[in-house]
Image (cartoon, rainbow, N blue to C red; front, side, top):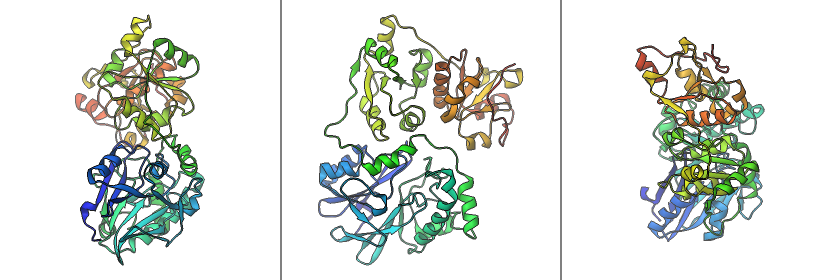
Length: 467
């Protein structure tokens, strides 16, 4: 078959920052590459074209989502293509470097590209002898390469050196070959921010700073210098993908729960997650509930902050789709979803329950830390060092629960917009902190309201202290 650009459909998960790909093979069949367990967008794209997924290729044992390949094998009879070195515990076609799979006119060639993970494969798509593009997974990505510390900080240097060799192997492909990475801008697995999710080998030779490194040592220093923290659930998913996620025979549901059922769940060590917009949570919420607003990044923060072993219940509003909660949770391995509080906060209050609030202030009304008000920045370290409020302490949201006892009552909490700060305030309230305030907006807005400058560099890194 002749391959045209419209035969490739990128499927972007904006929250996790990843791309899956659906390839129309021209005969009613399709190839899926790095599909997540949330197959809704892939199913829609396949249905629009009248396609059945005949092949499901995974580039690596993903650290940031559960693979949908096993589900595609069950539902569509897809042949799962994956690295032999990954030792997956379910039926698949194990591939080694150079192995080729006939897709029916097109060919998929496995290319060993370790670095992001040890068993990592890239897949070169060929039309006859012509290389069309490469599904590079977490090896070469747009203007960067994916992180090499997911198997432990002690192996980051070793795997960065493997990544160096893998990128150069990919760079040896012809300039016109398309680059189709899985990881893109924004995920914790990779990369610098940016809009472009795909590229070409030739463009990357010109713009990727890692390919411009003069030698292997310089490459390793550049790649590992920017590694920050990453969600706690990453550590669990590689083994979950090796075993294979459980096959679903029906779409999981989120049933309504009575107030008594929610109270019983909390007594048994469960969590109540409030997914309403932050303004609604601030105005009133069930004491002890954790605010994680239902948005693109919901799965990231659910998987970072809460255990996958505890039952979860949710507080929603009538405009929110329970299916979105379910699929964001399931794609990162969170399946102990008890349900949602029927009637929401109104039902809780009607049953005699109390509510807590969180004050939200605009930048012009926020107290100045110079006047003795403790201020806590819960953004990522790179965000903090790029510019923060003078005197602000810094504790990343992902590690805040372990430091909540060090934070004073009366602290002003902020992030870049407000969602993470509200989550932080909810965690601090669970730990007994009182009189918390969340800044509406971030440090730029605070500085603009005062006509002052932000501080650059590490600055304060410990817990905030009042007078």
